[in-house]
Image 1 (cartoon, helix red, strand yellow):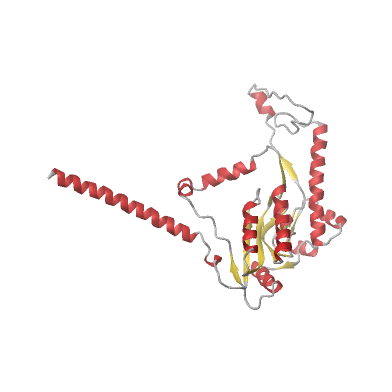
Image 2: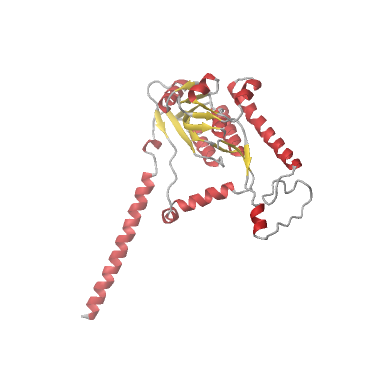
Length: 301
């Protein structure tokens, strides 16, 4: 009798474990399929690829990889870049800008930028690489400029009776140290860097928008504009929605009728993602930004 009870308990445990395993597998399958956008796959020869640039950015690899993928697809005739970003790292913005320009040259495909709520600073820099820029009347854009910022915790160290010890090879090796005030020489040094990066931004806008350098500089004092103001100042081409941008991209690509919109397959969740939730991705985003305590950014604050 005891043996039968033991066997029954064993079967219950094994059966329960099997059901849990099956449930996890089904959940993983649902997430796997659910993470793919239903319009990501199409046999149509008249496709428009819609790529998103969302939030602050500090790396260009994922986006440029997506761009290359759609550039290699013969069915994709043009790309619409949906921007909803205040900008990000200087280098990331420049790599995205150059990636789009090279994509246009190498693939021969048109790129239309569509501004959502915000496409400012580095977001506007990236938009300038497109053949045409659309903005909503209330989109926030502009903020042409560069910023560097960091925290100084020297007073906190002194309050804690701690001393920062530095041995360096030259006066500027630890310029911007967070443990002491900037010297006048260091302030001039950083301002020169900022000015150089600013000039690069202005030059990119002037070249892409076919504007005089002096005209761009009058607008490039860091201020933002509404989409309506940006169009009046020549910073965007048209006022319109995402659907307007898609329709325009279709016409520019010679597509007759309504184009099929395709999107990249979104990242599939791993078991680690499920267990850690957003905390793991947050840690990764933090690590991307922590290469230096000083960050030079095309970013609207």
